[in-house]
Length: 453
Image (cartoon, one colour):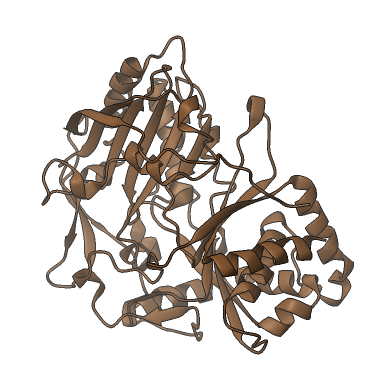
């Protein structure tokens, strides 16, 4: 039950990527010059998120044909997504970040690798070298001009290719990024947009005056104005040596965790027994109890995880909201309870963290951000890419073989991501990427199997 993913014995350190052409792509039609308001949720996400989408060879779509079609499609989608062709700026009067929708263009890079798609290794195994398949905004054309969106199309010797995207997180969250990919694919098929965007980010503006109506122990205050720090983050990449493993949970493992939670659920009626909740509770046990802090079982552990607030607001946000509409939920418990307590109680605490995110709570978080400026703060964050569905997008050249984030190992972030869907079928299992110092990894691994038994 629960296996350590047997990845390749060694990872390619250099994918031997050569960049052939870099250019800016502009909207195919004239767009309105405007300034786009960024909510307090958007404000703290001024960093790039990099994803890579791998495609096998296609008899009707050589990499060159794909590159040409993708570039033309990008120009079309920059009309409804005009902010992707804009640039971040700081409003001198409010000191807030905003997007100048000035049609300055999105980046487009054509590159090639000396390897075949199969030679670069198991796509599920997070190879830091995959970063070579994405163009960083800070390296693009001119150092003082940083696009908010850059595509890189890298061809492999076999005729397969990778579509690497670097997207500034102020623009979209994971759910709205999936809608962007659906719309990109629709325009590639010469069809109308799959989803019409909701652009009004004032829907998540703070109240006037701001009203913080809850204590927010999941947030920590910054000591400097956000606009003065180009890339602030609570979870910094650690300098210590980290071991990393992928722990695979099959659908049977997840069902076993659900049954374990149900066994004591009568005493914990608020436990919402879902795949995400039981996996998150299991990870919480393992991570908290593997910390190299001796045997202090009274130590409090706080886990953070994202909650989509679109359906939780009153009235709900449109599902097509183009922006960041995810806030951080939390659960806190003593290590003793994590070690000895009924598993259903841990699932209940994870459930309560999400249930806490009502309309008033979410508005209180947004208003807190208006008054104090800050970030989520906890022992570690579970970041789930499990069911975002990036690999389900049907492009003219087919679905990706695999889609994944470019991984930078951090001990305070644990990633959940899907397995490859063989033969186009479904896969309800999940891979858990953990990066920890060696001694903590040994404890985590032991606990991972112990609590599954």
